[in-house]
Image (cartoon, rainbow, N blue to C red; front, side, top):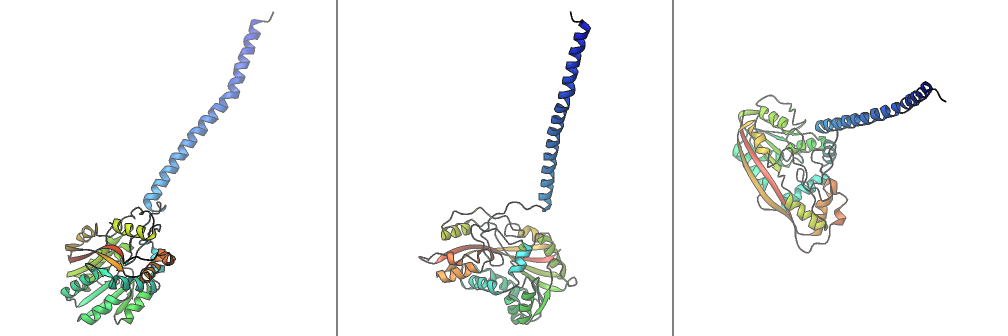
Length: 322
């Protein structure tokens, strides 16, 4: 007959062995589970912070809007605020010239360019500044119509050269850090350029700084409402309309408020018009001149009639810097 004490000892050893065997497994599984939770939460927080700081880009969104008289078609991502893409585009004037000619010759409805020139003549400036001078057409026009000094600023060396060829003083500079003393000009123009930077407030502050106390700023931009434009592109390419692009940093919708932070008075003139392309060839050349569409000119279908491309632009006239 087995001693009861021996039976108890055997049972005790069995239980102890089970504890020694299974407890480390359970503990390890528990630790692994919580480590996984901690790592997941930590990575989620880091990703959120990085996204807020701009080190991680959100998903790209298509855009059908123009940058300084540009368009982006269905299926293409926006390049308006991409510094590298903007620098590459404006290293040469060929494509830009094609787009400018289309907007100058084919616009039907209120013409923002005419309004800008009217506002300049009304201001009768003695010292005139244009930032984002592009082809140099406006500053060249100002030189022949104004009795005073004309200065053109651009971040593209080629565009500065074109301004000098137009007979004005061309300066290579960032509009957010203008190399002029306070109160150097009595009128400044920023045509379709302020949305090229993520911080237009800085550029507006600089423009206000270099203007004299009674000076004025004329700034053109686009509308964030691209619904009609996106529908026109979709019909042309026989595709579904694309979702709206992200808001511009400086647009019809927010421009007035941004300008009022630095100017006492802001007048807003909205120009809802359209470009009317009479032939496929003219439209194809226009499409091919747009950076994200350069290889799509051959895809433009035959037209059964003129192609109407809606455009919504706005001219702001800000007066009396704060």
